[in-house]
Length: 47
Image (tube, rainbow, N blue to C red; front, side, top):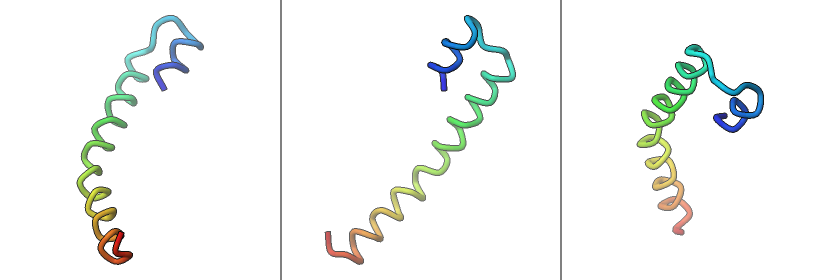
């Protein structure tokens, strides 16, 4: 996303930075659930 901001405009707006920050926070909050899902799949498939 940052690369697209840099290409389209030299400085990102406060709204775009807030959107990026929110996206990062959401992804970080979801990581434990994703990791657990992967662990469950590995157990089920004996990987």
